[in-house]
Structures are given as structure tokens and as C-alpha cells.
Length: 358
Image 1 (cartoon, rainbow, N blue to C red):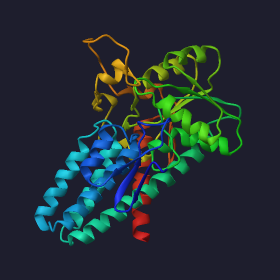
Image 2 (image 1 turned 135 degrees about the vertical axis):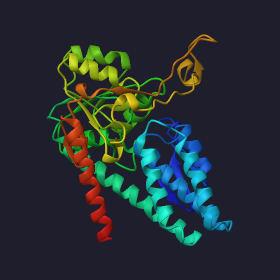
Image 3 (image 1 turned 45 degrees about the vertical axis):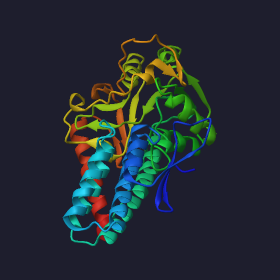
């Protein structure tokens, strides 16, 4: 199955809560079901949830068109759907970025008939999916230049095809290096509390034939101290204007360890993950998730009843610990504030040219 696919009038998602033991679809036929799938992490990864939300807007528009809702009523109901989807996960900026694109199209076509508007929204969602894969493959090629032959790479959480429309961001870089014939090995952090590394990244790398070894999060420092890591590369859910980046909880600790051991640390993320409106990591909202994710593992309780629990889903790695940020527009190095603004502007110009050409 693909991570997400729109077919037969519905959004088909690969249920990532079931992997690697089961490959099961989640079929979403309205925007509420898409919102639930995002909130429950059946679809996850910043680019993937943005794309899923875009298709959620399509489902809302189609349902309203079928019900005969039009005019101002249609716009108001679509605004409700946009807000419902936006509330699901606050940290990943790709979600609000994708919804902003859909909202702009809705407002630009407010006078259009409901069915035609739904069709245009579907075209836009398809366009975003295509752009995502193109960006990931471009990032993979650019980032692979940073990976030497025989490198030992450490990654955290899952930033592969499962977290995107296709190919992956951080894992896209690893895949591209492997496809170029580089003899690489990947250390896979298990990524507590939901084990996205153990369940998803290890599964993807095995499927791709990339040599890998699973470790617990607490083993990373030991492996670095033994000289077993040449670089760290991770995805990101939001990169602030100054280069601070939010990623899965535990990423900040890896960046500190990498700096202590003289190991380069890279983010790999599309320009849609760069939020120039957020000046620094201190302004990034951090999602707090259900305590049960920490007190249980695989459905089995591992902590005493009634224990207080903190469960932030993300942490922020300061720009001073980041060697470079791999984007589809190029590898960005310090000073990040200046260079990130340049790549975002370049991406906007290329998108505008592509739309004009179409």
C-alpha cells in the first residue's frame, strides 16, 4: 500500500499504528474521519499529515456539494472543516501550510459552483502530493552528497515514505545514498514512547535492503563514544526562521551528543516545513499527548497506576547544534536566518513559474 492515496471517492491511508505486524488500510470518507486518523497517528509525519488534511478538505467539499450546499453557506462549512483538521496536531507546520493553500483556493473560487470547486480542490491536493515526491527525491540527491561511502548513519523517529507522500526526507537521503551504491549502515533509534523507529523506520529500511541495526534511545551516546556514528540525520516537523527545529522528542538530546562527539547533525525537510513566521524554537507549540502512551508499551502497562506523566511529542534543537538543513532547494548552512529565507523565496518563485506554465 501507499502511505496515502485518493481513490474510489475516499482517502486510503496505511494504518501506521498496526505496522510492522499488519498492513491494513484506513478508509476515510469524510473530513472528520481524516481528522481522527491524524489525531490518532494512523497517518503521521509532517508532510503526510499535511497531504492527508488537504484531501480531508476535498472530502468535505464533495459531501457539501452532494448535499446541495452552496454560496456563503458552503464557504462557512468549509471553514469549519479547515479548523477541525487544523486542531488535530499543533506542532507540524506542514498541516497549517497545506490547509492555507486549500483555503486560498477556496476563497479565490468562492463564486464557483460547489462541484467545480470540489474538483479544483482535488486537483490542488494531487498537485501537492506530486510536489512532495519531487521535493523528497531532490532532497535525497542533494543530501546523499553529505553521506560518505561506508558511513554509519544514526536516525531518530521515522522520516521515510511513511511520513511523506513518497520516498522520504531523512530516510530519502539514506535511500538515495544506498541507491548510489554507497555502502552505508544505519543505527535506528527505537523512539519511545510510540516506537516509530522500531516499528516503522526499521521496517522501511529492511524493505529497501539498507543494512541497519535497532538500538534503544539510551544507547545512542554509547554508540557515538565507540566511534560508531559518522553523521546524524533526522526529519523535522517545523523549522523556525532562525534554524531552530522541532522534531520527535529525543532529537535535542541526540544533537547535544553529536556536538559532544564532533559528529555532524543534519535536518532534512522540504521548504514547506520552514516557518518564517516563527522567529525561533521558543515560539513553536509543542504537542502534549496522552499519558497512556508512556505508561503502556504495546498495550501492556509498564508504570504504576496514578503516576504523574509528561508526554511532550516533540522537542526543539537549537540552530547552534545544527550543521546544515537539507531542503529540495539546496543544502542550507549558517547563517540560517538569511539562507532559509532565500530557499523559501526560491521555492515560491519556482512554484509560481510552474503554475504559470500549467
